[in-house]
Amino acid sequence: MKPPKRAYSGKMGLFGEEKVVYKPVEEFDVGPKSDHVYVRANVKAPRMAGLVVKIFVWFLESRIFGTLLLFMLKRNNLIHKFITNAELGEPPLYVPLHPFEDVKEQEVKCIDSDLSPPEKVQQAINCLPNSSGKILNGSKSSFHPWTILDYSRAYISGEVTPRMVAERFIAAVHESSNPPLQMSFFINYNVDDIVKQATESTLRYKRGQQISVLDGVLIAIKDEIDCAPYPTTGGTKWLHKVRSCIDDACCVKRLRLCGAILVGKTNMHELGAGTSGINPHYGATRNPYDINKISGGSSSGSAAVVAAGLCPVALGVDGGGSVRMPAALCGVVGLKPTFGRIPHSGVLPLNWTVGMVGILAGTIEDAFIVYAAMSGQLPCDQSNCSILPKLHFPLLNSSKPIADIKLAKYAEWFNDCSDEIRVSCSQSLDKLKQHYGWKIVEVTIPEIEAMRLAHYSTIGSECSTALSSHLEKLNPAELGWDARVALSVYGSFSSKEYIQAQKMRSRQMQIHMKIFAQADVIVSPTIGVTAYPIKDDALETGELDYVNGAALVRFSIAGNFLGLPAVTVPVGYDKLGLPIGLQFIGRPWSEPTLIHIASAMQALCKSNYRKPEVFYNLLNRD
Image (cartoon, rainbow, N blue to C red; front, side, top):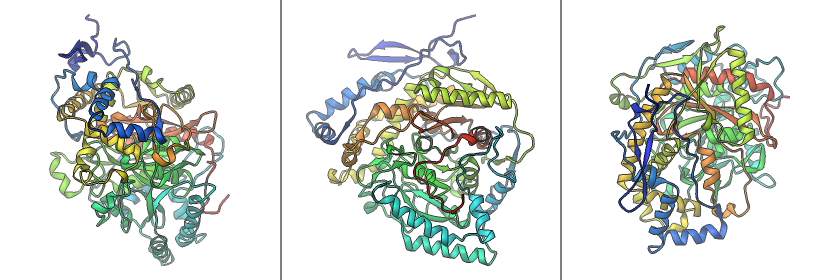
């Protein structure tokens, strides 16, 4: 028997630069005894903010020093070694659009894709247990965020009306936006529009003509998604001036058809080009568990409004963990569906092959309900698929839990996080094993760092290309300082580097399919560090913190780069009381299995959930 071969070998390039020669995928082992060496993120860049970042931008944007600086940054952070100069035998894969395979999933229900959004929502409700959000460890939950069904039942009973809840929401947003909190949840919200929607919903309930359980439920929208009557800024001060919002995005239209009250546009990291959620134009979105800590990015406001109880659900866009990271940092659920499952029309085209609309919610059941409302391709998209994806919903009300689930775990990657995260996530996995008898399958996922760099080259190239015609005419002073650094790096990627990155995408797709031949899902922590402090010097300029940034995105990349569905569930807290999330990554189109697993994990952890420091009880219940 031949020993397993390494995934790559080293070699020197023409000018003495080290490069990698990647071996064919079929020649190496993804099992636990593989001799592949795990490469930790090699981030060589100091944290910069305030005056220091301004000086750095001056050098970076200068013709004399900029080219040299960018070359050194890419070389020192191993982009040249693993991507630019690498030898890859795979053909490029430009779009991670998966052919549909009708994989047999346990305890699911096939749904007619032609149903209207309200009808799909009702089908989802029919899949829920009578008492949604079960707890399995025998103790009562110490904290219960109000769910979609809580609001719907309160409206039907007449205990409260959508108009009353909307008025409480408006008061809470006003309070949270001012000292001493200054949470910076929203970029834009319109009191008159919110009251108008709430009044119409209240009248529907009085007549007994509510559209769905989402009727009157408050939902916030990341300011990367079109939603009338608001401009779509992308977290900038200028983008809405050159790109008008003329209609709702498809996902927003579907929620509006269900009667949801769309309460405004949440704050985000400028252009989605960062992981902290610190926006120099609209403020740093603060974490409801500790207002001196980051909420994460780029869907910062969406995660924070859900954690703070202002909305049971919010929408985000996940281009590099941008839904799952802030969800984990703020202690909420984050669901990113398969690429193509939710139409992308009406979303800023900043990263069209890695970005996907995602859902942030207080519970997995609420994420499922909103997923049901939004899922399904547009007619114009269907020509891209020879076999249209079927829509299956998980039967969370089944008396028979799903069995024999295999969870793939790459130990070296799983443990590449803080000790508190490692312990909390490992204990949560043990709970799943003990309660359900599920199995942990030890695997090796090679070239994770190379995949991160390939993703960075891809998202950077796509963002730079999407904005190039506008950036040529833009006064740089309209951009935040950290965004200027990001755009300089993004614009430095060559066509060769983009194509090399797509070859890595093709390679990693094959690797992950080999792993999914052995397991149902891949499990990992969601983030490598918990929420870190917001420093005063970052408030005006933003900050460059690539060390923490790499730790935050470490576990997110496959979901975006390979278009795989993924979900994060809160499972614990660090010694400061900051949330920790556990992530499950699934096969293409396997959202039902992911939702089943997330529900099982939530049920085992829910009794330990804690109320955030900043929380608004809009139902005024104990």
